[in-house]
Image (cartoon, rainbow, N blue to C red):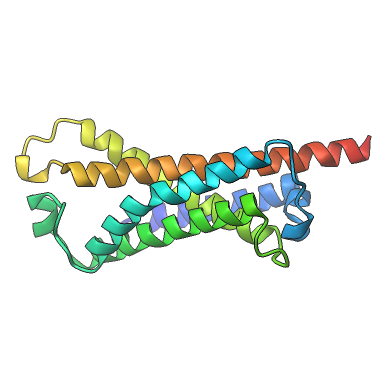
Length: 190
C-alpha cells in the first residue's frame, strides 16, 4: 500500500544527495584534521557536550523500550507493541548515537584521518532524524488524544523533547561547520 510513497521518498532522497554533491560537494572533501579551528571553537565544543548530555535520557529510554521494558510507556502504547515498535525504538537509538557521534567528531576534530564526509553525514542524517521525529512526536502529543491510555506519559514527552533538542544542537554544529568551510573557500578564491 505504501510502496509508492516509499519509492518516492527514496527517489527524492537520492536526487537531493546528487544535488547537494554538485552544490556543496567541495565542502565535504578533505580529512577531519583539515577542518579549520574557528573563533567560536569553544562554543562549538560546548554545543557538542550539551548535545551528548541531553541525549542520555532519550537514548536510555528508547534503548529500554527497544529491549522490552514498558516503564514510562502509556498503557495503549505498551499494549500495542509489535515488531515494528522494537525496530523503531532501535532506530531512535541508532540515530541519537549517529547525531552525537557526528557532532563530537566535528566539534573536537576527533577521528582526524576520517574523511570529513563521515562526521558530516552522521551529524546530518542523525540530527535530521531525531529533530524531526522528536519535534513531530512532541507536537502530536499536544493534540487532544481522547483515550487516556493512548496519551503520552511524561517520560515519553521527555524522550521526544530531548531528542528534538539534541537534533537541533547537532544541526547547529553541522551548519556552523558548513558556513565556516564555505567562508574559508570564498576567501581563498578571492
